[in-house]
Length: 281
Image (tube, rainbow, N blue to C red; front, side, top):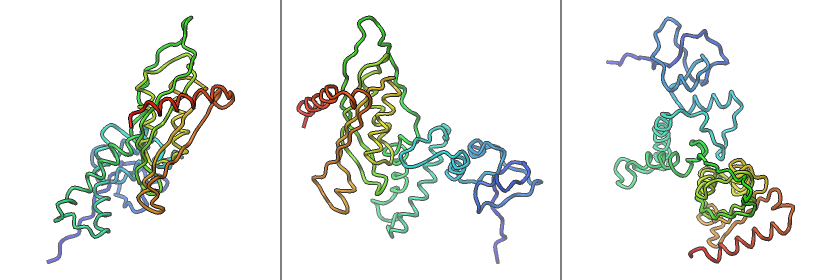
């Protein structure tokens, strides 16, 4: 006895068909006289009166493409996510990671170490190592620095970092030294590290990360005089390829007085040396 074929329902509204509104080339259309399901997060994401697909990641990706929004590994896409979307995306990523484990011929049903691994991977990517892509910038509460005895000196903050290489998805760990010449507002000391870690928790290159941190610190402090020095070790050099276990990469971005004034530049690097001597080993 053959089972009667029942086509899957496709989420859509009652708008007239328009090819440019189709979000997925493989999606099938439902005749206008068929009732549709109530609006879901997918409909909210699409939000343009067009057709949606039952795959949230694809719907969000289609919307970013329509808006010419870049969504590289190091980009923040939090403006395109709603509060309830992350759990849905984690579920979709879990299915995808199950496919990867199956392709690697890993028995995720009977191997006790591999049971649940796909979901652990999905949660780790969204909630930890790439969290900076999906969460908005940390709220950097600012304090006025405009009194008669305002602080006009240099501030140097040491921030530990964890990131991930975009090429091989290997861990990157290191430290950033962030320097500013105080402007009209100051932010809490912990905010420098929060901003740096928010920029780092994505797939990135160290050169890009240096620029990202400098830009966000300048935005938060209104200071044009910003410097960022990062030194880090990369899993893509240690764990594969060249297998260089003593590898260390250093990058520097200097803005304003840090770039143009040799005395300010020297003071910044002297402060770094003092912090390196003081830091616990």
